[in-house]
Length: 551
Image (tube, rainbow, N blue to C red; front, side, top):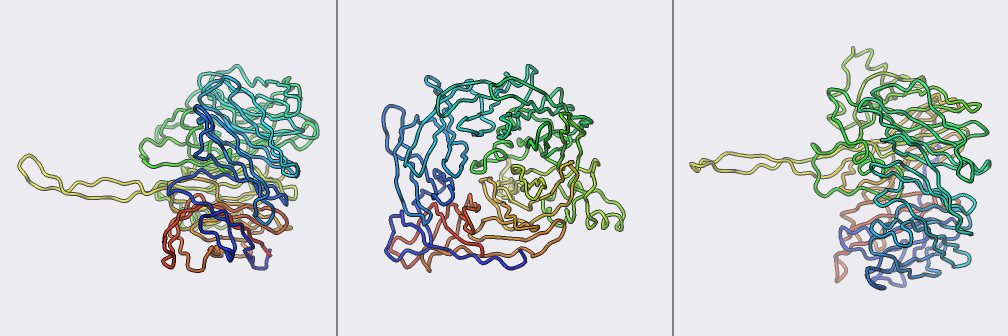
């Protein structure tokens, strides 16, 4: 996409206390400062589903959730109020051309099932509820729907992971056992919609320095057909995320991120607590996030990553795991801003260092250089026969406060302490792989001036012929960069979001997102605090949705 992207902001509904007949360009809902109750799912030309818990009680320990469906002009078409237990948590959404599927988990009550799948059919203005059960205290890993069958994968502390499935039409239930091994962790589930196979990607943590990656293949009733055990897995390399994509009968590719496992210089971590709660939550759901109000890096044992890996299945046989270290990516040290990662940069001769940073890194990069990057990893994408992995790097940031203290004799002396400011996003890594798992190209995008106590996926990719536009929404601006393989077609540019009123001045924001909606249209969302001194109530906190077009 060599032409510049023009963003045209279109009509927006006015579901706000300040709505006026002349309201331009965007949809706003009042949101208390620091709140995060609103969720949405884009459903193509059928509109957008917006849903959130309300303050209305509907019975003992129950609250009402509001489900609203808009049209493609963001005007309300219909809405429903649905009572749910107060401990129910929204986790993930899926959408097709005909329906929207929402997954909820009741973390405290299990009388009639603790998993809720709502199927919304916008055309018929219908919401149906379907229930299943996972073990108490288990945590959902992934959610897929195929042929009106829901599949939910989970991990369970001190027990084996598993998958449940149930029909959204007949209610028929099935279970998928993964392994009898201890210390197993489910990473991903995927569906081959053509052959009706279900795949579970998981790892087993045999020891602090050894883990192993597997993929199980099941038939539709739930019987285990094959287990793919990938070869040449390197000890002391930890699989942090993994996703399997079936590509045909007895064929597929698994890919994800890895980090160097426990060594004398690497902090140990509880593979279950820290892996799932502080890391995998961000990987699995594009709308979920991790919020930290009181953060201590010394207690943060979130797994850190040093590169991407791939492996293929061919003719029903699992192949070799290939590792691609970030230190061999193009211009890697121009993107990284985390001082701790830069300190770990090796110091070869200047000529060698320059060659590493500028040469095309398409071969397997298998070395032991560590960058210790905290990553928010995206789901594996497929475009023009290539498999594309994207991830966003962030690091904790502090400032130092100094104050005077006094000893027993009244003598003053300074003491200093660190205050957590938030997580700073620094850059994104994007790489493309062929069907054999070889890296074809890699590229990146700087992510500037983003510091937040909320972590969520921001980056998105738009594919147009052989070019890719990388874009994200932060600080009331849309940033976009066009790449073509290893090359940069257009450097990063920024476009400011158009406000609801010309005198609106956003000065705080969080959880900004942008994604493709339908045709040339995109949707940007987030939370903002806005000041407008021309209004009697000159400050407001809102959740907003803006519709825009890329021309």
